[in-house]
Image 1 (cartoon, rainbow, N blue to C red):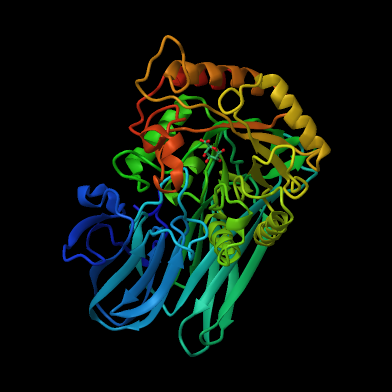
Image 2 (image 1 turned 90 degrees about the vertical axis):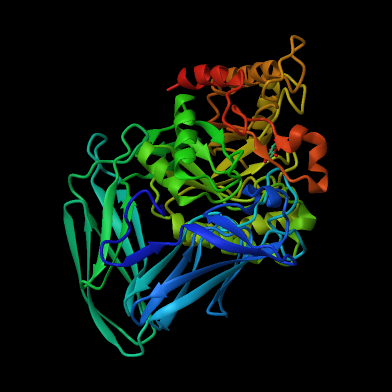
Length: 556
Ligand code: ADA
């Protein structure tokens, strides 16, 4: 399954899920691996940090153009079609594609060289407090393209500011990009439907091998808003003649910052949720839908209304679930804990810019995403780091002005970048890393933030938590015991949930996850896992589960 809804009625799409041959580099052995999937799922590849080639043959019935779509390859890919390189990509967590023209009828071979090694060329995937898996970790599909096709369909909802509270006058902006793959100029009829509304965009002429960008804005009477309480979704379908179509699923919701408050559809919201790594004991980072649904069901059982996609763009199927369940999402680019030296890697700026662009282009239409985040705990206390934060926030705003921005800092009392984001967020581990009284420590943090450029803005506690090893019970309530984890979370939640200067809290973290042994991470991570989950990597609940459930459910 590529998405939780069909994205085409005309365009033919085939998902290339199932078994692919995998040839690890410098090995005679050939594996038969499931796609999507991590190669670590195979007992002989459970620790494999290296490269290899996936191979798959496809049949084409008549000459056509094809689009090969890769939703996530971890972490570097080079794609060959009949032995010719057609695209390469860096970063496990963003999608990419290749459009091939004049593909003849017959059998063809797709080869994907994949590499999950750490080296100078990789500025974002490096030894860290999560695991960089290997493989075709998200769906792969092949589409038959007509010579004129729809490349992009974006929808931006809004409402007139003078809308009376109870009935919003919803409006929407539709942006379409249409490509002409042929060498001759083509004229095509374009139209869109959204709910009951039909929009005729007229006949468009496109010169050979060029693309055009169309935009339409207008009112949408009688539509219902998307919100946490009532996540109403609509299908937006764009068509060109009977030649091609694209379907997106959208929602009428508007997110704004009003002083220290975050508003959704004009109502103040308090975000309560988890940081969630895409990681599950037996499948690595390549969760099938049923395990995504289990995670969502558990988080909703715990009483969340929000999620932070720590620390990278998520699988679109999970974002589709958030759209359907009314979960507010802080989606962020891929970075965790990079100091100045790592941010000065010559590939850092380009790899971040690519990730930001791909994240927003691909995930723009999800109503659940209400915040774009960048650069978790990077060097925001340095001049060099500040320049990079500033540059990336400018890029984000150039791609999307409809959502506020933030970043999670841990540069306490030294950060010089708090004036840059729309929302100030901080990671604080009182009771775990710092044995200071939770309330007093948080007051000092908030007072300093307001004096250091973050004043007048919403504040979110983007991480707090404690370690608890599943099954380790201790009457002494020592650190790493389930009892102590529950005690610390209880104290933190009693303070943070009742702090009127705070607009949201994200617990670190939903579930335990595998970490990278290299780089010394093992020393502070028993079992070579980050053990701060409410559940372990098999989703077995710890004592803290019911403590958090009672606190989260106790606050609307
Ligand atoms: C940091 C970081 C998280 C995780 C956490 C921890 O705040 O953002 O990814 O490493 O610390 O468990 O200490």
